[in-house]
Length: 154
Image 1 (tube, one colour):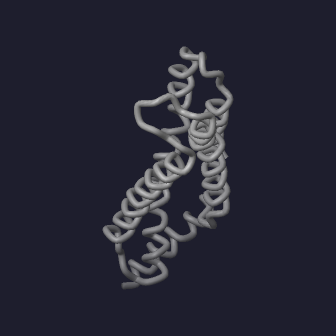
Image 2: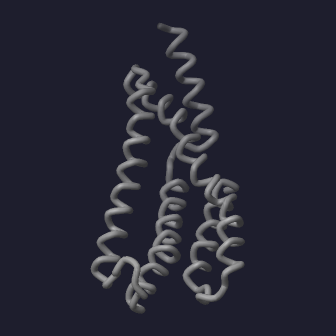
């Protein structure tokens, strides 16, 4: 449960960014600093799950495929970042963004939505997926015991 506190905190900070008045310059510096705990949680959780997945995979297949599992996670992270950047660029284009000019309200609202509610929604979705991950601490202990037995029996 504690793994969700940081991510939930980050989601709340992201939501608050969407509702800041345009003249809240100090808050624009303070809120990202407050988001640090959540950002750290979101970066640690996926990497902390990978070793458990590797062991579950070894028990199921009899093979250790660490490189494949870590490579898959890196691929998903890089691909997700690329898709997010392409999506944001397209949204800005569709809402009338013009570089170096005063932006219409449609662009400002698009930026607010992409910097606040959309990331918060994705963070909540990630928390749900993490919560539904079936490998609990107890299940992981059972899995490790089964692996130890399987390794000792050859």
